Amino acid sequence: MADKGSFSYHAECRIEDSSADDKTAFLLAVAKEIGGAFVYASCDIEAIILTGPMLREKAVRLNLRSRVGRLAPVTILDKNMELAALSSQVLDALKDKSQVLLFNVKEK
Image 1 (cartoon, rainbow, N blue to C red):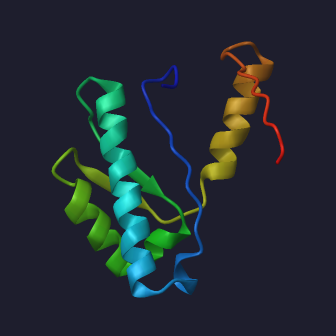
Image 2: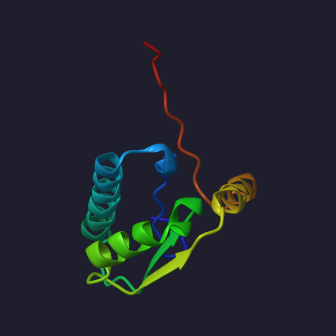
């Protein structure tokens, strides 16, 4: 959870290059992650905000809204906002406003 009461999850996929079954599977996985975030938050959620260029496709917007719209109101911003969010988190870390977590990832 971020300090400002938000939860962020980043997934990246070139959905336009996928088959219909792959798209459905990916959107189901996104919806499951959103549902998991509700369990993790263990509090009332005011809104679900979805961002990214994959949301420019109307079928994708409708699919996700139908799956998660019962949990909270859904706002869709089909812009790339991830870099702005990342830079904001980096600035907070540099100003000691948020904790930096270090992970050791072993390569195979």
